[in-house]
Image (cartoon, protein in one colour):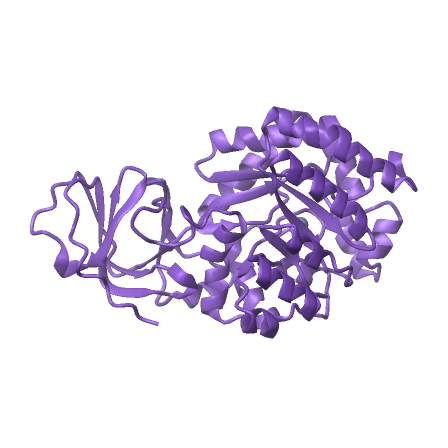
Amino acid sequence: MTTLPDTSNPFPENVDQVFTHCRVATMAKGNYGIMENAALAVSGKSIAWIGPMDALPETLGCKMVTNCRNQWILPGFVDCHTHLIWAGSRAKEFEMRLDGASYADIAKAGGGIVSTVKATRAASENTLFDLASSRMAHFLTQGITTVEIKSGYGLDLDTELKMLAVAGRLNKACPQHITATFLGAHALPPEFASRSDDYISEITQVMLPAVKHQGIATAVDAFCETIAFSREQTRQVLETAIVLGFAVKLHAEQLSDSSGTAMAAQMGALSCDHLEYLSTEGAEKMAAHGTVAVLLPGAFYYLKEKKVPPLDVFRRLCIPMAVATDLNPGSSPVHSMIPVLNMACLLFGLTCEEALAGATIHGAKALGLADRKGSLEPGKDADFVIWDVASPADLCYLTGITPVKMVVIAGRTEHRSV
Ligand SMILES: [Zn+2]
């Protein structure tokens, strides 16, 4: 879809940089919003102007001009669901699964998440920071400019706080914008075996107040599933979180229908994530309460799941569909948005335009950041990527290559391909 540039918007006087001779997919309103033969101006950390080349003044009074040579500019990817901080490896579990063990089998046998918990508890804060920093550095080369990071591999107060402290350090050290989410209700820690209600009390009475006190997370998440926590237990976590002033979200309906989505949507959740087993009733609650559907095809792919999320219902009810890497060591060790876009199209049936909107503007919506991130519009943060592709669809079509030319975050060039 081509949007005619708004020529009533004159070129502003004071800009710092202009990117000329480009093709732009703004992704505003969830559409490509294509402008050919365009220019984009940056003032400070924000986009100042986007318009046609022939609307540029004859002399640009700014310091820096970049000729994009007809390459494409899209918003930086917003990865709204990751578990990017962890220690240890789950390659062994991958091999077990190839031998026939299911996700549930591995969880029941004390493997899966619990093995990552053990390694993450044992790792120092500096070790976790170093591991996560290198993942963030790789994300930058993949055009990912905003990242949500969850805790949830500590499952005790000290390690959960350690993970969130690492997320805070990453936010200062890395160019990307990071939002931190507390996910204490990710799995039942071994010391609370058969006492899941006691662990939920530990979360609501000890962990959540401590996280709030330290101010190191803005959102709270939980895993509502037969192998994790019940709807009632996750309700307690989200209710306490809301009272404390956190935004909430939920891992729901991944492996079965627990009706967690309907509950979370009614509580005002920003997003519900996974959703393969979501009922129409659950989707209607999402639509009624403005909850974003976060689709995670990487986990679907790695777990060799068969049931796909109800895209036709999302489309009919106009529920925004975000797409995220779900980067984690167990079910989605996917360190790039590019293969996830491809999986979203081929496994779930999204169009290329839907997948790209999912990784940009709808990802930003899922984080409550749509006023600043996810699309190219004047006033928004100057977070964008110049791609050496023939069309935006190439980003969904090609795999095994990330054709990034330049990554700009808050107006600064943070990465250039060699
Ligand atoms: Zn997750």
